[in-house]
Image (tube, rainbow, N blue to C red; front, side, top):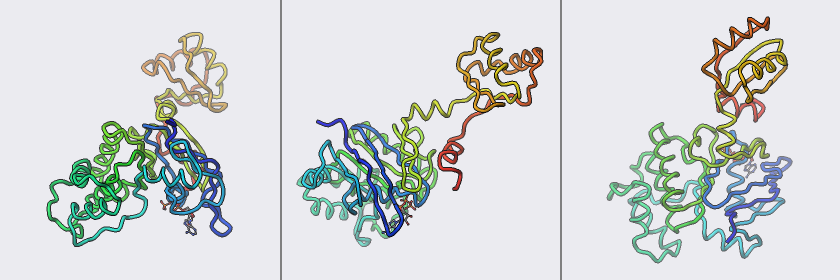
Amino acid sequence: MSEYVLRTRAIGKKYGANFALDNVSVEVKRGWIYGLIGLNGAGKTTFMRAVAGLIAPTSGDVELFGESGEAALGRGRRRMGQSIETPAVYPHMSAKENLEVQRILGGVPDRDAAERVLKIVGLTDTGSKKVRNFSLGMKQRLALAIALITNPEFLMLDEPANGLDPKGIIETRELMRRLAKEQGLTLLVSSHLLDELEQVATHYGILHKGKIVKHLSAEELSREMRRYLRIVTPDAPKTVALLREAFGVTDVKAVSKNEIRVYEQLGRVSEINARLVAEGIAVEGIGVAEQKLEEYFVALTGGDR
Ligand code: ATP
């Protein structure tokens, strides 16, 4: 069994003269929650549609569960669920009735499937309430339930937190975590906000103007997001040498010719400051700082938010 649920190789999608996707290679291993992050128009939906077979890429290829080629992709797509476009629901029916329709359309023999997915998404208490009277959060849950009715191994969700209030966003995160942990699902989830998927995604791909500009794991991201002691001085090399010698600092880097980041001994700010000054180093600024997710994202995408 392939450890890869999804692999795309250099997918491109051209609309007229514009590339909605340009050379997009993404790998998602079994058990991952892959966060596909990009601004509006970055190409997230186009990517998911290409994986789901709703559009044909102009170039490159898609592999699902370790296999590519038309027939294998057809088989692979039956093992996945997706909520990319708003699913067609019958507004005059209840959640359960809608799911029953989807169960039959999806050829799912298990008659308890609707109850099972209602429970997973937390919609069991909606009873006979008609879908047209559902809140946005409830509709999102129903869309997720529909994606789950065929019992998929791999789930793609396009902006599941869109339009939800903070409570709804937290609940959606919890649900994604549970799906991965308890149901063993692999997920690919898109968002235009990096912090929306923080602490949920195990891996990230940052998509910008149709290109993947960065791949990284959650550990790599948190390493990049660490707190650090920021020292601004025109004397960076001397400062680094002194920090190493006098304080035994090893995890330090000069990010520019006058800015140093020290990733350890953050509690010794005043002591370090006093020593630098005593050594005749001009300290123009010193303090504990933290890279913000949002800043990081803006830096990667060139700041044209
Ligand atoms: P959003 O969150 O706003 O949907 P996205 O990251 O999902 O953004 P896409 O919807 O994939 O972005 O769109 C990527 C680019 O491709 C956009 O510039 C969009 O205008 C263009 N595009 C998408 N579908 C088509 C189409 N059918 N015809 C022409 N251009 C398209």
